Image 1 (tube, rainbow, N blue to C red):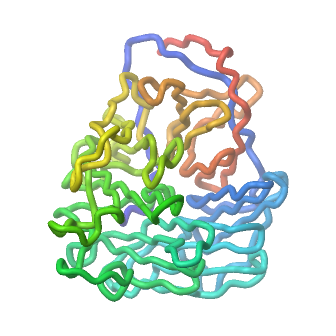
Image 2: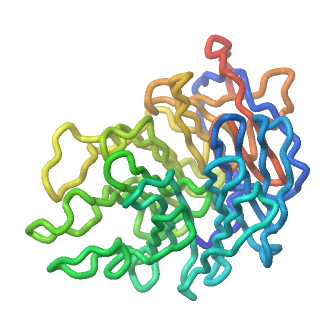
Length: 396
């Protein structure tokens, strides 16, 4: 979605006592003042980050040292809102912007050099998220999604690690059938937010499947692809959707990010969705929902049960969310703070700085790829283990 700055706060209005947990982010030196929205922890100490002014960063030692990469050619004014990496040498960055300002660059030599691999072919398009998986012969391994063009969400796919991309649809993904073209249709005023590269989820665990969340004037949705029901009678659309209640249904509100516990077959077991309204910092609104996979699926119907609404919501608009399997908790971040949930999103509580942390260690974050978090002005943090016994009660 064409919103360039989502750095607003939403304060929690309450007269009740609230639980706060200590343990926080260790702030790391990034050597940049760029606003960072892209972050991908590959594992083994390797992570990549990206942001404004063509900025790309890389670490090979778990964040002790962040290396400033060479700027991809012609990208000095581009905003890299998404990054996906395969290892310490190979990565793709996605810029978000109108028309040809949405681009993909790829490096295979540890960001010493870059190759421009794809430019948005839609002059009215705007890219929002990219997700890549390791190569599997004969399968898709990457999805790129953008705001609607001519009434359909713009979706591009790759099967060769991001070197070549083709448009979703007939003569794109290659199927033929009596139903003709099948696309992800958008409602009037519906769009996707390019806040943290988490509006899109993708997996090749069984079939290549993906989900994306939306927002805007038509209200939010969770849209899921439906490979297993292609081409069977009666001709199904290849997408199913679930309505999500976020914010007030304006152009600045909706679902901004999603994360899962694990893939269960070709679909996620649980999906946590976060968002809100980034333009109304003083107006409390619904900011999180948990969606669970149904136990029994009726053909051509939704794969998910009705959303579970949190009793205690995160205390503001949230742009990113992640599940920490080791600590068995969800964590979500936004401009005004960090929240955690240990009961699958039924209740959230703020994660506040300890007495030895900077006072703003919990605030001004855009995107998560645990244990890392990134934000404006070159902010990078690394999550410490959360001591949940160190909870205190604090009254407003």
